[in-house]
Length: 160
Image 1 (tube, helix red, strand yellow):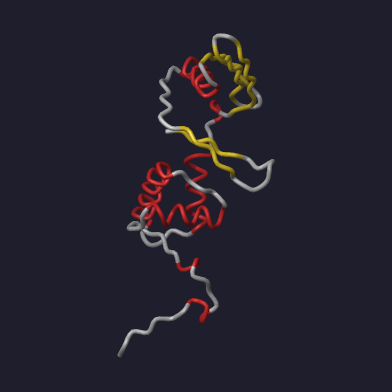
Image 2 (cartoon, rainbow, N blue to C red; image 1 turned 180 degrees about the horizontal axis):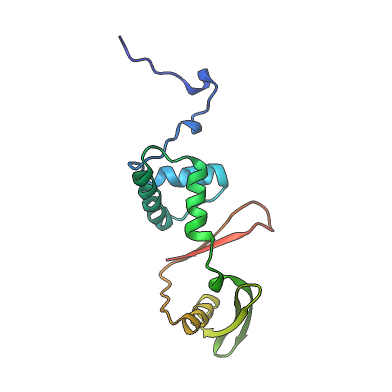
């Protein structure tokens, strides 16, 4: 018996729906699903990092990972923030020495205002967080991409 190739259109499907993600899938498949289903276009370095998270999930649970699970993993890893780190607001002030950032973080019930300085906004905000939480933040790469369409779309800033 000869194997028969079928056209997905013949069985009421599209080519895009044939993409399967499992523990052997590469970064391209995961990035493709996020872009196709959620309009989230990941920079290359984030594709590499996030695909490892998806592969671990697939290895742990076995089988294939669907689009909803990929999106849930993305939200849990990059969008859901611990209450202490939740951004409430910020003000940036430029002067001759650079940028001062007044950053309000924390829960709605207990907001905390921090202040940091730097040559630019990212450095100033990082300085404020470093002082508050006693950590070192090294921004190796910075990128930003829209989570939707239009001028009012939310954006996800990502740093390495």
